[in-house]
Length: 456
Ligand SMILES: *Cc1c(COP(=O)(O)O)cnc(C)c1O
Image (cartoon, rainbow, N blue to C red; front, side, top):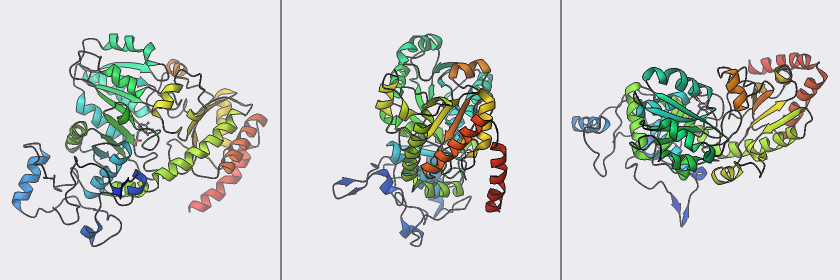
């Protein structure tokens, strides 16, 4: 094996580290798992392997690595794919992939240059002309665009169903629409963006077995960007592949675009192989940044969730707020409540809420924010707010927006790690600006120069 690379990692080895009788939790392993400092001159932290290619110790090694990489023969029981070329593998990516597996209890992972690269590569690995893809709605805007605008051009049929509705009410219609077709993929996103509607992962995995022509059994893919990898573990509920925009919570600092998938070894292997041939792997610098981010993932997500609870409670009591979509506020009478209790470990830190007064009020609110930044994206350390109807979901047809609860007064907020009292003060003054109808622009104008100076 190349010198800097930890030897003897195999996909099949149990991903468990024990201290005495205690099996360590993922957060305890994020600083060290899969990396051996003695192989890197004792460097405590994994170096950035900023290299396109790797030298082979012998021609025999090079031959063996290629045989395995191209699937020309099965790997021997103790044999590993050696490092070849950074579009195929790189230590920063492989160590990151090992650590990502820990949160979801996955066999294997694969890291991509963006969340969309992960999603597109996973879909293309399985879908062929004449097939049908079954998916929940709404989906992330990019995914929705890819499915609705590109897949039909490749002869792929679309069967969508709404999130937030008990599957018992939908199963027959989904089965009818997919009847007699090959259905290789069922893709769901839960909770859905921006409404926080949820989809029953276990129910979908069961439904998938009865879909289409029955052969092949569909691969159930779950976009787990909103709650994962800390607060929801879809593989435990019957999913086969978990997809991430690592740009969001996994990266967590709004400074890197990346994606990942984790899941059963054979499913990930098929996606990873296509990653090699369409070239969607992340680079070493991205891998290194994400390794750094993973060390604080649990802390960040927990702090953000606590803050979000305070902000959601404040919003729910405010007279200008019509309703708040936050999992932590879901009523026990909601037909989806049992699903929430079954599959979510926590409510996360994404809130959407509708304010009185439609788009005009929503814009006034967004323009008046001083601590919270007006920007799309989510999951970073800083709080962000945006207007789904005119921004992230502007591509969705107006009648579909209406049906999905994406209304002109809706604001989406990703809650960061600031002090919750400061966040509430900002939200409160912005709502006050909506109510009074003035002063907000001035407040923002005063806030801006200070911010610009600070970034210089
Ligand atoms: C951001 C996002 C994506 C796309 O990820 P990129 O890293 O921007 O390519 C996919 N799904 C969800 C739920 C997202 O929030």
